[in-house]
Amino acid sequence: MAKKLRYTCSACGAATQKWSGRCDSCGEWNCIVEESPLSAQGGKQSIGGARGGRIALSDLSASEAPPPRTRSGMDEFDRVLGGGLVPSSALLVGGDPGIGKSTLLLQAAAKFAAGGLKTVYFSGEEASAQVRMRAQRLGLADAPVKLGAETNLRDILTTLEEEKPQLAIIDSIQTMWVDTVESAPGSVSQVRAAAHELTQFAKRRGISVILVGHVTKDGQIAGPRVVEHMVDTVLYFEGERGHQFRILRAVKNRFGPADEIGVFEMTGGGLAEVSNPSALFLSERGTPAPGSVVFSGIEGTRPVLVEFQALVAPTPHSQPRRTVVGWDGSRLAMILAVLEARCGIPFTGLDVYLNVAGGMKVTEPAADLAVAAALLSAREDVSLPEGAIVFGEISLSGAVRSVSQTENRLKEAQKLGFSSAIMPKGDKAPQLRGVTARRFEDLTTFVGDIFGAG
Image (cartoon, rainbow, N blue to C red; front, side, top):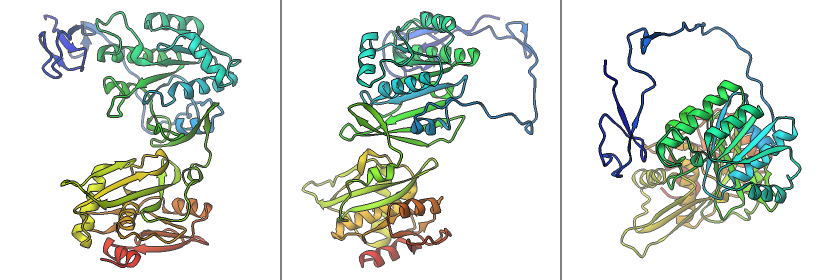
């Protein structure tokens, strides 16, 4: 049987069965390259005519010991990893340029190395002297970390085979060059091939590999999405340039909970851990003001209190603005529609601005009621009662639905001195001493009771 050829676009990764000068998917020219298959198609029980080996199968009831973990000593970093670094694992860390990815991983590498883990750090973006200057600034010049500056993946893998480290950090995957792929470094084909080789090397040699990845303007890690499926853990390093807070978030973790976060503060001496992020996010909050609401959320296994800030003002434009920072813009549009349709409170002709203080990004639907409260507080120019937190999900019918882990949310609020909670009526959490619960089953009752409207 004739070998079937397959062609791939080096710019977007689209596959086709024939070569052409221009990619039909992305429109780029001279980017179609031939991709050789691993082997010719064989029969039902063979590939390329060679019979494979039998795979040992096991029952679902079979039990195995949990994988061993190595803690770095950075509690926030270990929390996001699920308790520590697992051998033979591949991690991908993404984030905006200049957000502090290299600083974080250099500090983590120094911690792991100081704990006895043989660590190698390869930089493809900076010279060794630049990395040493950063280490001196962070006070890590004496850390037993082996350093190299290289982009040729073949040379890197050869060095790793000879050095036999337990942890290898590659900064970054977009700068790696695989000499068997005919495309420029950073292209889809190069990134996919480099990630595959490094991941397989980690599994085969029993070492841990941490890859640094750039992100696009949409906030996604640049390159093919398949890279995130190859690795065991995907972490995003988030934060606003104007804030000193940085959040390390796990969006995928095969060895621990996803959506877990670690909070850091950018200082002159590097990234400092924040053991109580709720207190940090609310540290500059003074007397309650119109449009300001404290939301008790859950990030992974950790309860976090954050402040929603809203501003509603008459618009000079024909089309009112809807500006959101730290929350989902489409979710804001839904809350505004429910307030108008179910409560008769219009926002026509009004600009709406919504912000999550401290650079935090909130994704859970439990913030719906807090957002509605902030919008109404700003529109009516009325502050919420002092010492109150708000949480609850709003349905399209205007009902206030219960959320998960209510008790943990209330305990975090109690720990920080909050005395009342505005929450769904359906929640069956036990009453906590010192925290008064005000429960509502629909948005109309909430608006009438809290703001005297509706």
